Image (cartoon, rainbow, N blue to C red; front, side, top):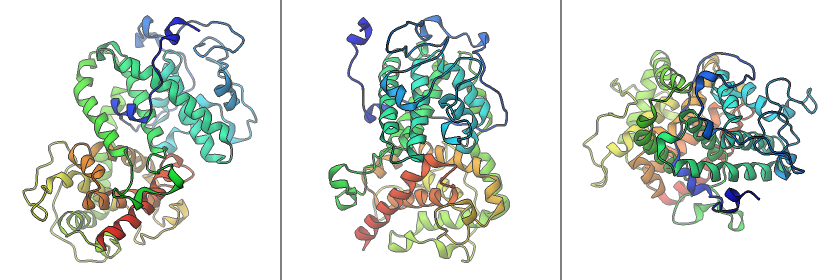
Length: 433
C-alpha cells in the first residue's frame, strides 16, 4: 500500500459535504470526448498520478483502460481515453459507458453537453472528479434497476473515494485548488445529495414525521453552507483560467423563467407569494388549488437577488417575515408554472397538459437544482428547526418538483421529492390540526 494511502484519514460521511458549493449553467453545444486542452494550464502537481500496473488494475490510469477493483467491476465498464469506449450491449440505453453517459444525458439534467464535456476532460487529471462522475452514474443505474445492489455499493464506494480526496483538497489554502475541478466536483456532489436517503431514519424504516422534527432533510442546510463557501473562497480563485465560469455567469435560469412567468402568469405568481407570506399558518396553506381562479392581487415585482428588500412585518410577534421572503418569492416563481390541476399524477410529461411548460423543462430543472442554494441563511436554519411556515414552503417545493419534472428524464429529483412531499404533508397535518 502506498505510504500516502496508509496514513490517510478515515473516509468522511455526508456531514463532510457541507464544505462545498454548487453552481449550474445552461447553453447549447455538442462536443465529443476530447483531450484536455493545453490552454487549461492544469498544474502538474494537481494531475492524476502516473499509470502503475498491478494485478488489481490502476485507479489513476489516464492513458489506457481504467480497470477499477471490485467497485469498478460492479459497474461492468472500461474507460478508454480519447477514442472509442467499449460498450456492453450498445442497443441498451442503460449500458452507456459511465463517462459518455454523463455527456449524452446532461440535457435531461438541465445542464448543457459542453459543460459536461469539460467535466469528462478534467476527470482524467483529477481522480476525485472521476469518482464523482462514476458515483452519479452508478446512482442512475441503481434507480433504473432497484433490485441490483451492486450499483448502490459501487456508488457508495466512489462517493467515499470522492469525499476522501476532496476533503484533503478543501483543507488546503483555496488558491492551490483548481477552480474548475472544485466547481465540477461540488456540482456532482449536489446531485448525489439530491439522490440521498438522509430524509429517512434507518430505524424500522419509519419516517421522522413521528418525532418532534418533521424530517431530517439536510439538503437546504447543506446548500446554505455551499453558498457561504462560494461567497468566501471563490473570489480568491478568480484569477485562474476557467472554462466553467463563463457558463455560470451567462446561463442563469432565474432571469429566463422570470421573463417567461411575467409573460404567461405573472398575476398568479404574485398571488402565490402573497398567500404564502401573509396568510396565517393553517391547513388551508397546504392546498393552493383555489388560487388559480381567485381574484388577482396588486401586481408587485420581486427580483431574486441577494439584496432582496426586507419586510418589517412580524409573524405572531416572532421572527421577521424577511427570513421567509426570498424562499417564498423563489417558490412562487416555480409554482406559477404548475398546471391548473395541481393533482396531476406522477409528474409525467403526458400529465402536464401544457406545451409551454414542456419547452422549458431544462430551465425548470436547473432552477429546481438551484433553489435550495438560493434559500441560504436563516431560512435553511428554520427548516432544520421544523418551523411550520418554512416546512410549508418546503412541502410545496417538493410537490411542484414531482409534478413538473418527468420522473424518467429527471430521475435524480423524484425519489426525494415524492418521499418528502408525503412526509411533510402528514407531519404538517398532524401538527397544525
